[in-house]
Image (cartoon, rainbow, N blue to C red; front, side, top):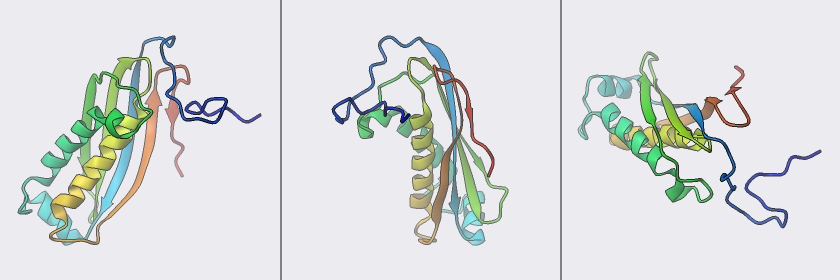
Length: 160
């Protein structure tokens, strides 16, 4: 049996899911992604050496702002109140910045798209802030790590 897609009606038309009868639960999603770059570029980020300013501070704010705007550019997403959005960076590698977005909401629908969008826009902002130094950076491995809450319960990504 093939499961019906939630955003397609019986006529095959795109539709916004009706969440009016769903219960309110605490929902959380964690997404991750990576920006790969030359070690010299990463050193400039770590030492606040980029001419545009503090790369990570700007990327953090951009990611938070993006999570709050998801319904503006993903057509079938609901407007939902976000209780918390955090963006963390791991600079322990010698050629990449790993990004983690955690989004929480108490509502009727999940926050996976908000977390994925936050990571994506934070990564794009890092690229924008560093492109004068290196245009060959790669944004990669954006994925949902975990989500909790709602009818479908908990999802945890299996390690490859």
